[in-house]
Length: 333
Image 1 (tube, rainbow, N blue to C red):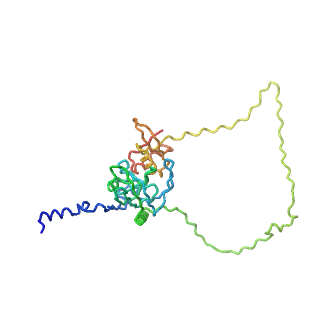
Image 2: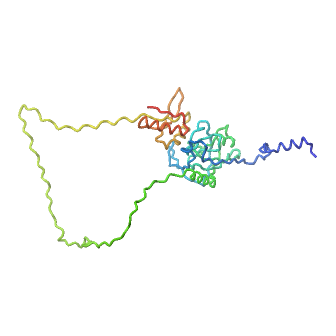
Image 3: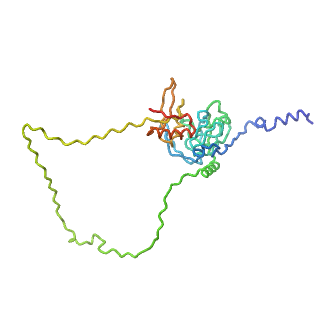
């Protein structure tokens, strides 16, 4: 019989708190992503949890074509994003939480579930795609900070991965999202109701075939050109002032210059982060990403506009702040 202390020690080593240490090293941990469709935030009633695929778009000369690809499998480089977007809205309207199991992808539907396997250590997690990015030619997915920690590449920043869509879970998320926020249907006015009756209509009389019309029915008529009379030039006596010239039409007034009012939603040290925000705000209007040097530091500013007037800018500013970008402001250029 084992001593009592030894039995206690053995039990503690194999308790649930130590299962990770007791597991064999070749086993692949799997972390499931909880469905992220609606949150408790009241703003989500306006912005959160919608199902979205999106139209083709271009970033830095590269075209991306979002689609419902439920056979998607690809290998490439994964990166992660965190504090710059924590608490902000994702491309499908949810609030980004870097501690949740989520990810950004350039073309997959939102939300959808993908399995991400770290090819360097064998770890695998499931994450919910609810954002767009990364806009780097060599990267295929941007995961949250928490997902990067579980995959084991948080410190190094990037790693080689395999990304596979989970078709069943993705379709379940789609149906759940559409049931909560169905797409708007076009409003078509109903046709007015009226009584319908039939009447007997007499057949049309007369020839119906133009080829059978007798030639005598057609008579050629010579058309004389109109006679235009030119008035004679008036005689001007010597020493008389020249006749007054007809008034020239007034030139159109020049168009007013385009308004220089913009909404600046953010400024980033990395252009890739600015491009992500550009995609997130694209539905609010024309978005521009422009470099600028502030305090000897290069930044990439994200602005919407130009806007028609200050009233329009104020209304749009409220929407952008409600979208999670509290630092957004009106600027003039």
